Length: 408
View 1: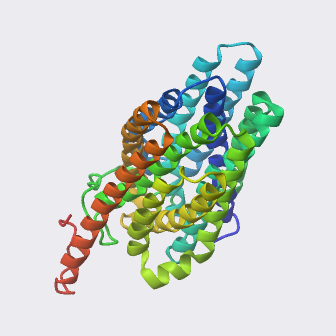
View 2 (view 1 turned 180 degrees about the vertical axis):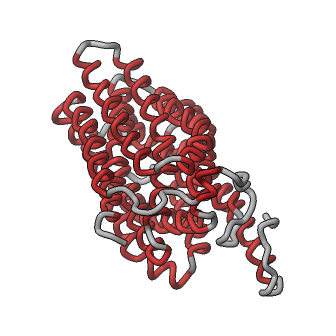
């Protein structure tokens, strides 16, 4: 793996940071304007809907066209769209429609970014380096997501929305510059199967070269998105709306989560060597989901401790799931596989967000966290059962049997 390829890691961190500064900053504006959990929920739903619909199609585009150019294009358009929010606020445009509109546009762009970035990694990173690179890449994404609240909360409290969102636009421009610096591929950018599209797309319910069925892997990968997104919607309502803390406290809590992800990156390779990616993925998601029930019950110090532990477990599970999903399909189909997984995750996010918003609106965030925990445990348990059944089935077959692609 070249030093230029490693530039994808800071680019991913910056893109994730920018996307989530925009979204969480917008959520904080709504909460400070006396918005309810349902108002915040509708914001996250407006972001999730276009991605859920477009992700599978955009995944095909990532397999058909130059992945590096797609990434750069996403960042450039995101920078322009992000800049529209502070400009609109300065011109006196009505805040709530402007918040929804700019985040809706950014959501459409993000639907292309997820499969394009995954496909570019599979294209540029040698197979031997894929597992450690995925570990660092996933941590870059999740740390950017969590640290966005730290940076966004503090900046919003002390500097106001216009400087925050202007800085956000600059993060996308910097990410584009880093990906451009990676350079063009010196061999054919895509396999022939991708260029000519001569083979039908692999079904998301079939097993790929890695020997695992893609449907439960996509379910696990998508469920990670559900947990993070709904958690990030509930957290400002809990801290600011119910506990009456400032945005800076929200930032500190999410910064603690970022530390948990960094610790997950540090121990992932040892954990995966001892437990295996499959056990790490399923077990990590199950335990992390269970911890969600306790997070809003005991005050800020306990919340920080539980967020640290939850992020530590979630980070390892997420890395393991990314590695399993990426190696279970051919390089020419990675974009499509991640597009399907992302589309499922966002569609599920819409449903869980609505349920959690309605429950929280009629009760409080304790019950919203409990709903998120219950639905996440059910999804992770179902995926674990499917993967375990498949593993036992293939283990009982003769080693010489060449074809397992018909099994689910």
